[in-house]
Amino acid sequence: MGEKTLDISWRSLWRVILMLGFVVALFMMRETIAVLLLALLVSTIFDRPVDFLERKGIPRILGTILMYLATLIVLAILFYTIIPIAVIEINNLVKNLDSVIAESFGLNLPTDPTSIINADIQEFTTVLLSGGISFIEVLGGLVGGVTFVLAVLVLSFYLTVSKDGVSDFLIAVFPESMEDKILDLYQRTKKRIGNWFQGQMMLSLIVGTTVFIGLTLLDIRFALALALTAAVFELIPIVGPIFAGALAVSVALSQSITLGISVLVLFLIIQQLENNILVPLVMRKSTGVHPVMILVAILGGAQIAGFVGVLLAVPVAVFIQEIGEEWINVKSNRRRNRLSV
Image 1 (cartoon, rainbow, N blue to C red):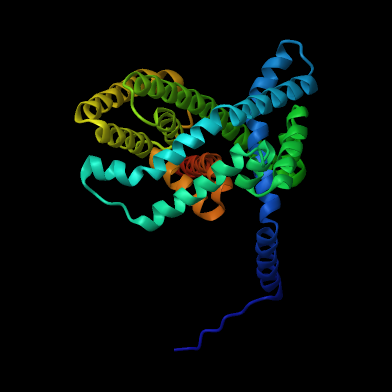
Image 2: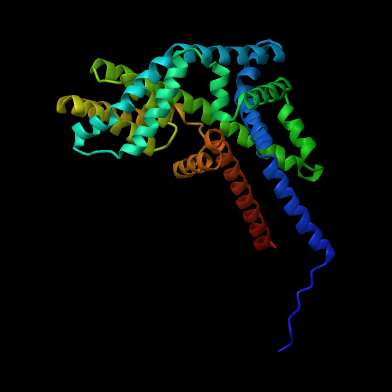
């Protein structure tokens, strides 16, 4: 048998070197890329209401300013009114979580994780109630600093003000041969993300409010904290509502068996209303992304980039699905063309 030789040209070697350099550059620019992706996400979310205001005769720049101001005002009001109360309740819930689980099921939670969580929440509660931290600083602490938040806000503002800001950015970045495909992919992804955000926020608001009213009427402890938990975990398909319901039932069981059964019935009713009325009504134009893919994306995003990864998880999952569907369509068309020849 003759010896096999591997011939690598200088052209191929330079391609490998350039690719490695590109990967290293992306890694070193990861914070800048995160800012850009979050700005694109924020701009995509605001595009729909700003377009609506523009159709009503309001100049786009004024509509953008109004939407950003309204959003910041609402978030600031929540931060200085509801959130402090909720943090106190969450702090008390975590502090009493050991006794709640023990009274409900006779189990003892490990002391180390609960003590660490309790210490972190206690520290945040103390700083928040003392007035030693601002709204922007809280956002900065979640996503990577005040500068990070301001950069996202400024960049997303400019992208939203320009009607085709994101499209112009994509045209500037990608070669001309790819423009049509990239713009079509962006428009489909943008529509799905907008529908998902609008539907999911509405769903979380309705479920959280319903849970709060129900638990308050039943006189369950930590009603606000449990309602916020239900609203937040509504973002996680299937597993989220089960976890929120199990936590609420555990708290109710620590008060009495009757209340535990009542809360279980309450969550079963809410779940039935959600599955048969709310989801078909509110989420009829949603992403179409499989719940397992969303769950894996959220968990993976949290592990890779923390809170920023969680924010970008669903948009990235939608984008990946769009690429997959495009690839499948191209393969199907090629196969169909070969069969027709």
